[in-house]
Image 1 (spheres, helix red, strand yellow):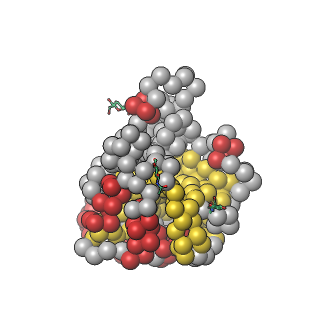
Image 2: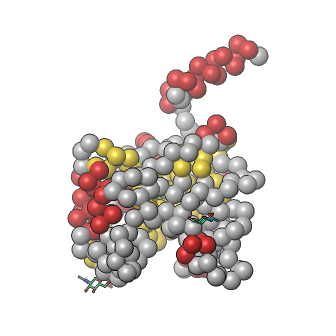
Image 3: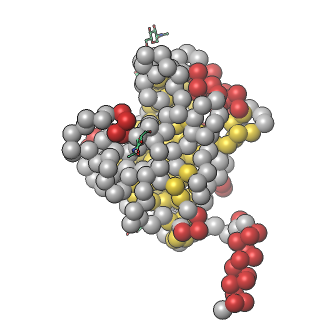
Length: 275
Ligand SMILES: *[C@@H]1O[C@H](CO)[C@@H](O)[C@H](O)[C@H]1NC(C)=O
Ligand SMILES: *[C@@H]1O[C@H](CO)[C@@H](O)[C@H](O)[C@H]1NC(C)=O
Ligand SMILES: *[C@@H]1O[C@H](CO)[C@@H](O)[C@H](O)[C@H]1NC(C)=O
Ligand SMILES: *[C@@H]1O[C@H](CO)[C@@H](O)[C@H](O)[C@H]1NC(C)=O
Ligand SMILES: [Zn+2]
């Protein structure tokens, strides 16, 4: 969930930290090694269309939007319903590489995390004691030629929170506005990992959507105008990819043949004939 790597942030942290353990996030996803699984059906998004007023803050590490209660996810092989708490972003510098996860070694300019906890828990810290207590949805952004109008209220609000601890309210937004269209949300990757900030707790079921959200270069660059404590530009707010170790990354099973790349179709045809 955040920033450069843990050791850099707190070099003298005690030994209880999980930052050097074996189920860390983010990771690089190697698409030829992912395993499709039919159980990874489309998620259900509850109240994601509901309009709300959200508090947006520069918390010294990132931009965070606190969410009112009631927005939830279920399905998609999640063992229970999870409640959304907040969303935040990871970015590079002026639209340069900035995502935490990478796909076949490629970074995106920005990645959004919508952080959910199992509905029976009351806080993130409580959920972190459960190895699947937290479910984070990750959305990648891609540079486009035109501005994404749905993001304008949030981009405009960034100007009001240049410094750490500044807060503002963004009115009349919904989670759906920040996501690709619902039919583009069926394709995703799933793996078990960690928070990307200290103490890097290994309690996160990650869902990373394959389809991206477009933002203009100017919109992406607006995030680089924010400041860290001490006044340095808030840029490169991502942790480096961590070893996958023994983990398997899965892919949703709802993908249809027409969405396969031509190269993949050709190679499977060749395989048929060579058997
Ligand atoms: C943390 O970052 C430093 C410098 O960027 C790098 O040398 C080190 O290998 C990184 N450690 C981990 C665990 O990623
Ligand atoms: C936003 O902040 C106000 C004032 O601090 C608070 O009453 C409200 O509950 C907050 N809303 C959310 C969604 O966190
Ligand atoms: C689906 O859920 C079951 C039960 O929690 C779990 O054992 C399995 O690994 C999950 N499969 C995927 C692909 O996430
Ligand atoms: C923003 O935060 C800084 C300190 O980080 C403070 O000096 C300034 O007054 C705040 N501005 C607003 C509008 O709250
Ligand atoms: Zn994050």
